Image (tube, rainbow, N blue to C red; front, side):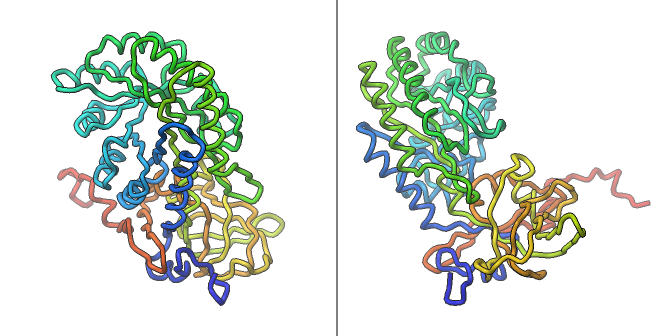
Length: 429
């Protein structure tokens, strides 16, 4: 806060950023993001006795600026589409530190990965079939990582649980021996790693201990079948604090549990330690972001709710309507003022479910005030849309009192750029 009690991030007053760049506005704090990258890197160095690498799960928030920043901190990156892969490459991420995920990769996406020497995470037999065709005639082997479902469930939202057996991701564990045996006969295939992921926004640590044993068993099987597997990828999933009642473990605690569990599981099986990979996304970028809105209309229903509307909503943050996610918010220029009312913070979209926060305590406010929603750096911009043909917000990167535009705001006319109007429909009346 400044001397007047106004909220600032990266040395920049948030209300001034709103007036300068407009709202809605995504704001990313560079120092916070760099600090999270370093926390993962240093924790892996401290707690794991072998080589290790954190890969940024770019689906959380993909941009050239974020890619360049995490690459400069020594992290790798995982992509799940041609768009994310191109962003990673153009953003300066070394291809040898990139992996391509996806449960239904296209030939074009796989060809792009092969062109740049990116490691492909084989998710299913269709991947194997396509790669067999694409690799024909190539001079060298294709680096692969094999994904399977570990059969571990976590207490998280059903939509973001990926480790249980009933999942669209990865081979069933009963298929592991079959697919590894087949890949051992493919001259083009170089299986370097194994991957399993148990979900997202997880506060529990015990499932990660369980995962280490499952992965070590798979590693033992792969090496027995002749694959020189050097990487074990435990995925990501560490949760963050969105509201006061959330109590996630620290990055250091999460890494310590994972690292010690993998090392112990390998020692028990007398396996040479692999390189340990993890894929943090939310826990890296979510706390670094806030979203700024301008308050607008008010609807007070005596005995029921007071609706306070902002100039954005489900198009720039679909998580509340999709996952019933909760957030914390305050007024930019009076964050510490006493609350005088409890409101329902509504978006501007033509959808009754477009509600960002319920039962939000706020001090007295008026149209034009800037509202700050905290911890919006992950899965807000990346999951956003143009619902109601509303342009996507701008993003600014802040640090040391400097604010730099890293994604510009869409203009309404740009939403027409892919429309094609047949000539026969051009006549009026």
